[in-house]
Length: 248
Image 1 (cartoon, one colour):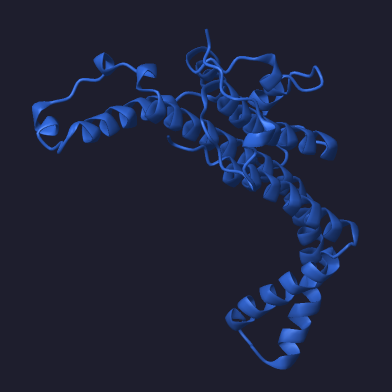
Image 2: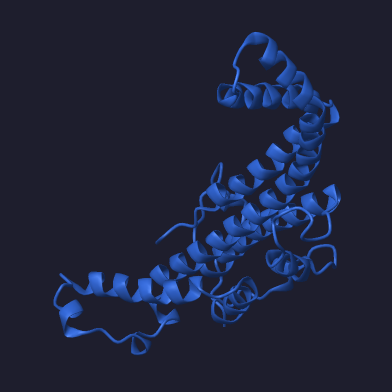
C-alpha cells in the first residue's frame, strides 16, 4: 500500500515558520543599517565605472552625493520587503499544502481504484498500444484524474476530498471553532506584493500556518485509522492509533 509522505510536507511548512522567526529576530535587532551599507557599497561599485571621470576625487564626491537619497530609498525598500517576506512565506505555505492535497489524492487513487472511473477517460488507440501492461494503463488513468484535480482551486479541492475521499469529519477540519479555511482561501487570492493587501499580523501568520500543519497531520492520521493508509512520520505511531475501521 502507498504511504503518505506526511513528514516531508509537514516539515516544509514548519521551515517557513522557522525562517520567519529567524528573520524577525534579525529585524528586531535592527540589522537593517548593516544590510543598507552592504547594498549601498554594491550600488557604488557597479555604477562608478560609468562615470565620465573615474578618478578618486570624483568617486568620493559621487559616493557622498548619492548616499542620502539612496539610503532613504533602501530604508523604504527594506520596510516593504519585510512585509513582502511574510506574504511570500504564507503563499509558499499554501502552495505546499495544495501539493500535499494532490499527493493525498494520488495515494488514495493508487490504494483504492474504486474512487475513480475509467469511463471518464477516453484513450486513443495510438496511446493504448504503448501500454505494456494493465498497470501502465492504470497509471495513465490516475495521471489524467490527478491533472483534473490539480487544476481545481483550493476550496474545490477541499470539497472534493470531503465528498469523494470521505474525509469530512469535524475532528479534521475544526480548530478552536474558527473557520481558518475561509480566511486561507481568501488569502490565497491576495497579491503577494506589499501594498496590494492589508498587512498580515504575526499572530495571524503563525495561526494559519500552524493550522495547515495540523491539517496535514490530521488528514494522515484519519486516513490511517479510517482506511488503513500508512503515513511517514519520525517514528511509527501504529501502537498509539486505533486499527483501521472501514466505513459501514
